Image 1 (cartoon, helix red, strand yellow):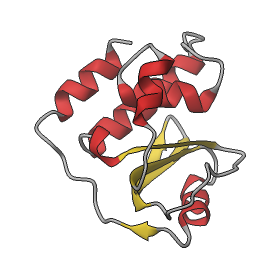
Image 2 (tube, one colour):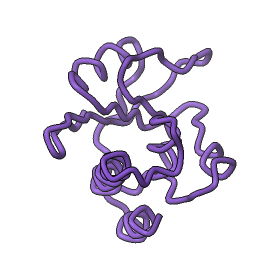
Image 3 (cartoon, helix red, strand yellow):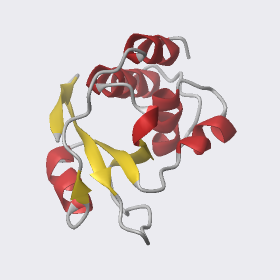
Image 4 (spheres, helix red, strand yellow):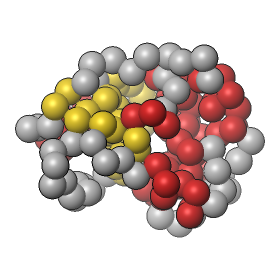
Length: 134
């Protein structure tokens, strides 16, 4: 798990293996799960979280739903239908944003397999740029 803060807002994320019969977790925080192969590195996730927070702070969010807004930022798209294609089947990146994010990450992912660090890929800067252009 990688965790930190952006503008005093905690976040946590990591690569997980979902169980065969999984359901989207209930949480009071912003939570998103995306296919592992759609995340190009840790800076991609941090940049997406930053853009998500900035969009709500400046009232420029594309969606009113915080989880959908985060999904759009991670996917680098304005189209919800395109962002929904990032839904994971087995290997995923779990992103949690809000007060107590690391603890909530641990609660949600308890019993799921942990896949280790998210590696930076050659397309990471392109993914960051797509998120910034939204």
